[in-house]
Image (cartoon, rainbow, N blue to C red; front, side, top):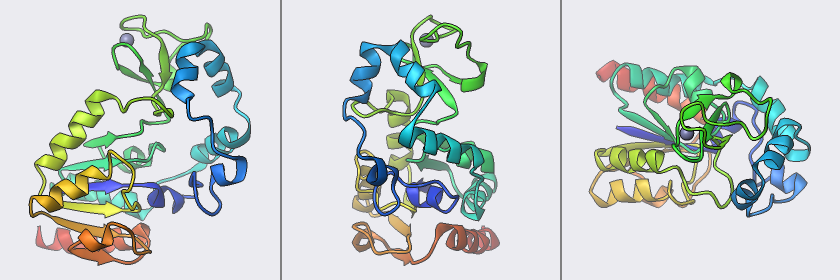
Length: 237
Ligand SMILES: [Zn+2]
């Protein structure tokens, strides 16, 4: 069994979504679609903007610092620790799964607490990096460091993408929580599992595009449904 999680889980921890009602981009407007191109063109400028953020990025960073895992994050970590859940794929960047104790995790869109070398793909905790001179450089290969979060126009880091496909290929059951999984590549994993005859367990307060494919749809917030599901699974595991 593997799990795929998305923004719904973050929203339950007080982090605003990007799109939809109350979304950061609904409020401030969509960010430029060429984020990665702009970063590569002038990394120092991109870092200066990041270190003194304004608008939606400031609101996001401030919320991220305060956010704590909710019972849904904790339940997934428990399922991993007890050997029921083999891997977690998340579209969230907030580090809350890691804070809750998940270790076997692929963060498709990166992790906001990390920086990543655009050359050798090594990752480092943001606080461990010297930012006296911008852009900061990779301690391993001297390549340019960028936030690990994936920008618009930036390819998903190949190591993460490969891991996601491997884990999904080896799985015959996927819990999908807090996401309708409509955006590629996340959209592909549930479809692949279903096509091979595996099962999807959808946890979402609302019906989604995924509902027709799901063997079981549990309607509710993941912070409530996941702990109940974990308790049942752990009782029979
Ligand atoms: Zn490097």
